[in-house]
Image (tube, rainbow, N blue to C red):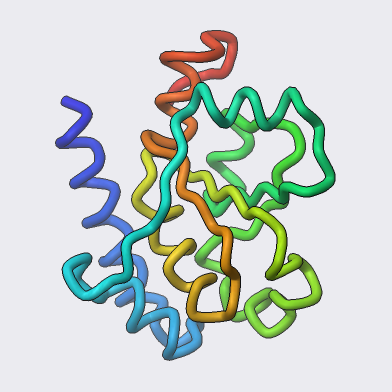
Amino acid sequence: MAILDVFLEALLLTVTIRINARKLHPSIAFLLLMPASFSQPIPQISVAELKQLLEADSNQVQFVDVREANELAIAQLDGFEHLPLSDFAEWSQAIQTRLDPQKETIVLCHHGVRSAQMCQWLQTQGFTQVKNVVGGIDAYALRVDPSVPQY
């Protein structure tokens, strides 16, 4: 069932991007539609590792959540900056000032698909320490903190 959910999430994202293509900067639209085989490998962390980083409360790590506002209304983790992919045109030009390209950057979404795409884009912008959370907030709710609502 989880594989089907991930596939459907990726399909929905692709359809959304095509519908909203006029709102997106061409570089991200291309990147999000690009097959994974053309992408640079993205380092990943487990949800257990994410929990440790959140508990460490280090200012050396920055956290980004790329889910939509309606998803955050259901479930969210403290300490994450909200940068929804659908609002890319609004925040992309200021990414170098909103985030520090030299800091470790942890990216989260629902299942890990959109966050992997964001990680890849951040790498093209000079971010050197990006990591994708495997399984996203769904895996975090299942394996780390059952009080986080699932959807």
